[in-house]
Length: 336
Image: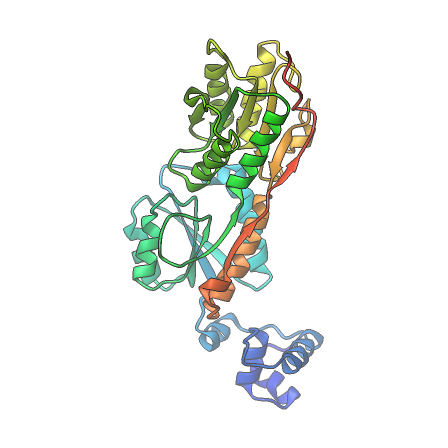
């Protein structure tokens, strides 16, 4: 096994700089040379010294994530699946993630100054996100899981939240439902704002009952509690639209606890992040969903961050994925 860059370069009859650039996929090296160098490295079992590689590329080989203080995201299945996609993709390139916890925006400035990461990954952006403004100001690379209202250009991966919830609400209306409850995520989160916009668009000029729209944490308990508030109204909804599978678990428990049949007495649709630990098709009544796997977001952002660090234009690093509406047994016509 070769661990010496010089030896590999001599074997190939090229410069050490060419070998280094080829192994790190630099665009300045032509495809034929890249393939030749990479094939030789694989054949000879070459493993680069990490310190030497960092000196050659100017990269640390790590992305930073700042988690909000006071929350344990490592118990949140959404974050766990997102992180799994991110870390597994980075591991293929011998890169890693550095986590820290803080609710102080200045942490990003301090963290950037330590030289421990090449870029940041931001999640759950709000309308005018101060993290984006700060990182743009200090010219430090970052990618965002989501879009927000800012004129600052930035790299992002998002899903069609508005279109997905518009389609889901339209489907319920086509089934005859007019009173449709929306159990949404935190009201300041952009994904929740987009989902409410889609919900409202589906009514196409018909009256929206404001009391049927509730926002809050995307937990089973919040789903159970808020579903109860809506079902206790004098004119309760006949269908419920949820922003997460965890919320749908609580909604399902509330509905069944009142003796209602899911899909017959009450229709339920939820957004499905494709959580590895919670399959919507395995509910007692399989759930109709808007689906977009959150793990894929982690994979996409890992590749996007690496490309951004390599100098790719931000305009080429803005992706919005489609949301799939999957019809199952938890939705049915409104009973007359």
